Length: 126
Image 1 (tube, rainbow, N blue to C red):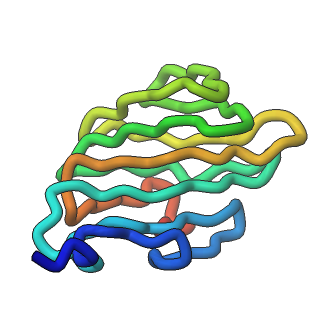
Image 2 (image 1 turned 180 degrees about the horizontal axis):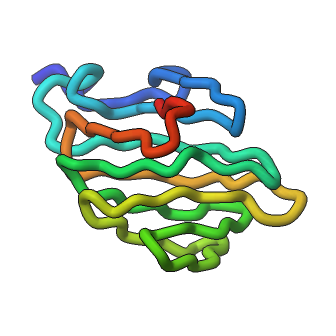
């Protein structure tokens, strides 16, 4: 068995720079054929947020590694800190805004290897 085909290396991934921060997709169906999940990291600059978006084909889990954020879930907003995790059901419109002077660093996981995203603001999402 070639175990390496099941490993996502720290220096790998598909890094996507944005005006608000960066995403690094480590495990996707494109990168690791046959996977049933998507996994990556999210970095949001202090005071910035990603666009309002939703995922029609999967739910998302966002786990805060460091920093804190305000997270919008449809009409509700919650504050998350290091160690907190939020579950975002499919089709729920959401965004995250980094609070304070520290960037938000989070792990993001999706229940599909072929994650889809719909931008509800027209600014483009990765």
